[in-house]
Amino acid sequence: MLETSTQPFEFSAHIAAREIREGRLSSEELVNSCLERIKDCDEQIKAWTFLDEEQALAQARAADRTRKKGDMLPPLHGVPVGIKDIFDTHDMPTENGTVLDAGRQPSLDALSVADLRAAGAVIMGKCVTAEMAVYTPGKTANPHDSKRTPGGSSSGSAAAVAAQMVPLATGTQTGGSVIRPAAFCGVFGFKPTRGTIARDGVLMQSPTLDQLGVFANTVEDTALIAGVLMAENLRVRTIEAPRLAFVKSPVWNDADDETRAAFDALNDSLGAHITEVELPAQFDNAISWHKAIHDTELARHYGPYYERGKDRLSRHLREMIERGQRTSSQEYFEAKTAIDTLNGLLKSLSSGFDAILTPATTGEAPVGLETTGNPVFCKLWTLCGLPSLSMPLLKAKSGMPLGVQLVGPLGQDAGLLGCANWLMERGN
Image (tube, rainbow, N blue to C red; front, side, top):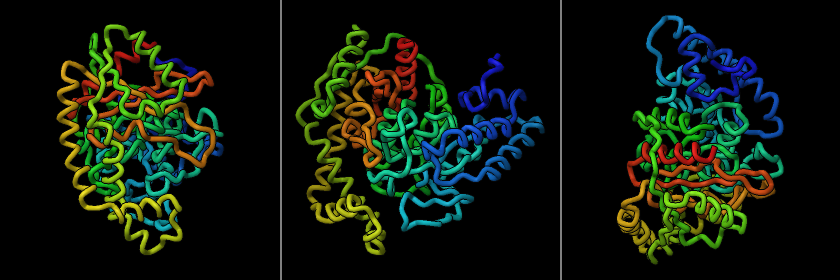
């Protein structure tokens, strides 16, 4: 039984779906509660770039009519989901965080959005993205401290879930755009194995690196929405006595003192469950390889924007496009070739372990809304396409979240979530 004082917007997604399915809650009640929550806090947080109350309520009422028919209901029936504003939506604008796409109205949904609708979700609205899903921030603030960044580029999605405006949201990651905002906002951010979620209808930045992901407030909710998008039943089974590898990675020196101390303490508390593993020298080039691929492919796919309106792009994005135009074919193909090499080494190094534990970010969310923070702790795992999860397991002395990143072997997404469940149960 749920406590009567609990407001519907506070429900986790799997509980809300169950309550709707069993007739103790209507989708309209849930969506109304979320809309009230948005009215209460979004003036300060600014997570949304498009929100139409009547459109959201119309979807909820349709969901309630379907439930009354007594048919078997899909897993997200009546549950509201926020959509990062680089996913096409046939009934809402998709402006990609740039004035060059102001008023853009797609005629079709992205396949992932269509999958969410088929699973019964209410598409609540569009969440703020950094400019074209790169670095220049949108208007969103961190729900824990409005003077701090929420991270990026999936800033609105992470903030909306952290502030309980919606229980679930979608995001993308080309560098660290799921893991980093999840860590800064204190929610779960999950980027499954590369290629397991269809990318059709999502702004293409770098086809080699672009990966879709999700945000939620529990491991179970993370599995629920990710399973829908992956067309896989990601049932969370806690892995008893998991074997974890602690990997500092070549960017360990970028972590601040508090983060290093927090991970030292976490590792000590895990005892025999964790073993430090050092990556070989080949990994020292991973960040430069990521950059060569990213800049080259970004220049190719954002070239048309540059040609028709470079003066309306941020300086940072213009420079990235120009740098990508100068990257040599040799640099690009060497970097592409390195992915298989790194994955082969990781497969060998991580055999005998269930997951890798490593920082999600260099530290807590920085003060200032002109930055989205440093994604350096995410780029290696994005380059390799490995499933990655940011968990709200630690806190800084300030009280701000410090993310813990778990990374799994290719294709072992369910096992990764099982390790996360064990860590969360142990931490609580």
